Image (cartoon, rainbow, N blue to C red; front, side):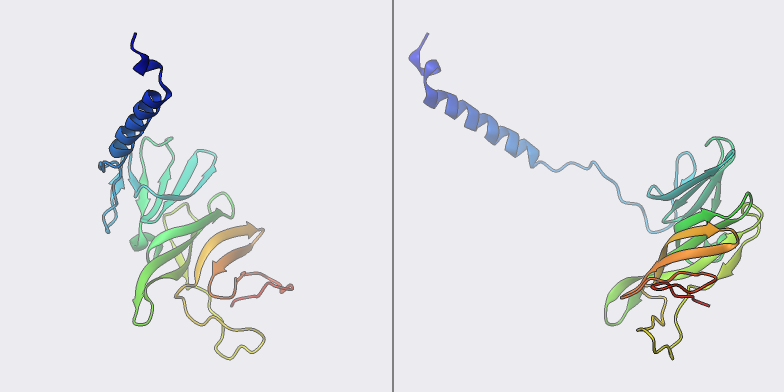
Length: 198
């Protein structure tokens, strides 16, 4: 055997060579991800979109919320019913949902909008609910504060004011909404740090 194979220098050269080849191959770009189109797209086995926001189940009903809408199955995923803003009235995709009882589902929706100053920003489009498992929908506009509010800095627009969580307690719906400097909670009584939106 040659002494070159036993040398520490030769081992370092081989190691550096391997690292360079691995590093070069790691930099090769391949298409291994895909972006959704801007319009709703049905992903097999029938979901609107592939970015799931929330999942709820009750008995045999499974609800899946996405940025493109709401999906329901009662057949363990064999068949799906899709809901969009044409059904639930609120503009855009679903950002949060909760079940109030066996047949009442509440969802929050939001959409992207363009402003002159800030460019593209998210906007809350309100809450929608169904009392008959999705056959009929009712809409509540995104809560905003009165412009005359003096106790705190009011949020008077739906831009950057979107609901990201909903909870039901008896017949009261609680929402957590993101807006600059505050969160809102729809509640039946006021408590420190919690404001009632009408």
